[in-house]
Image (cartoon, rainbow over all chains, first blue to last red; front, top):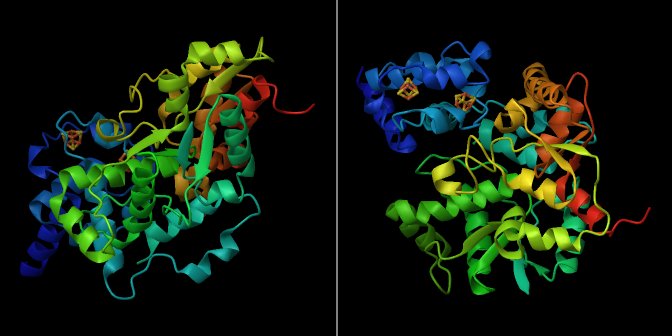
Length: 129
Length: 261
Ligand code: SF4
Ligand code: SF4
């Protein structure tokens, strides 16, 4: 439990998001383009982090399904910034020793000749520490 | 007039056209884009985590360089624009970030967010003016129905970027009108193409990109324009039934008569 609390505080600090302002309207999840791919949805990230229920989120593939499109941030009526919560959970997950989601040497096999450099840089940012 | 120019990694590589036409069209409109010396890749994605410092330093170096060379940094790529502007903004809201960046970099002159970040489209709208641009058009794109694709990075978060209305933008549509073509307004123009997920989950990227392209086609678009190399990749490679997607700088250069037949 104590460990959970420490992780919750760390996630809140990293995200800077005001999870306590959430009124559970679900608008963030309704607008999320990755909704169907996620086990936990944006409003659930907000709610579960607030409750300190972070272990499930840290282990879920959902953290890698967020596109960082910021639609949820833009459209949340309470300024909660769900995408920043998800980003913080993702970083907490990959910062743990040896937990890179994708290793740099996995990337070449995923390439085709038209892939822009920008995409590789982004992937390294998103998946590895 | 000279402006410090941050091309970004993709424009020097896969998106050479975006770069070349940007420079040539700017010259035709009276601006000299001066590439920032020794610029490094912005990282492609802004990490919103408050404690991330190292990944933001290349952007800070570019910003400081812009401040020292005319006060501004001009970008063409949506991702560079988003990263530079969000990084710059962090100085104004996060004193801890400011302190740690300056402690780490130990620059001759400390950087505190002084530079202005400018997107090429903003230069056209706010300084040159779309009316004046229209007067310079020698080959109007008459009869063309063009769908502007904004995606995410140019618009959000809107309180930081302040580029245009996040839900009802019009800068690219006005750009299209200035070139003599007809803009196509379609519902998905500010929804995500799938972004970087294409690397890990191409299926999801296909769904997102197809939805965007279908929406543009439903409204009668002949082709689409974008400022983002990753959007261009996703829309052309991942949509089920794609239509042509071009960089906005290329159509600009075409309308200004800078492209040989
Ligand atoms: S949109 Fe905002 S207030 Fe509504 S559920 Fe999502 S985070 Fe909570
Ligand atoms: S930023 Fe992530 S969680 Fe928010 S709407 Fe986009 S994909 Fe969904």
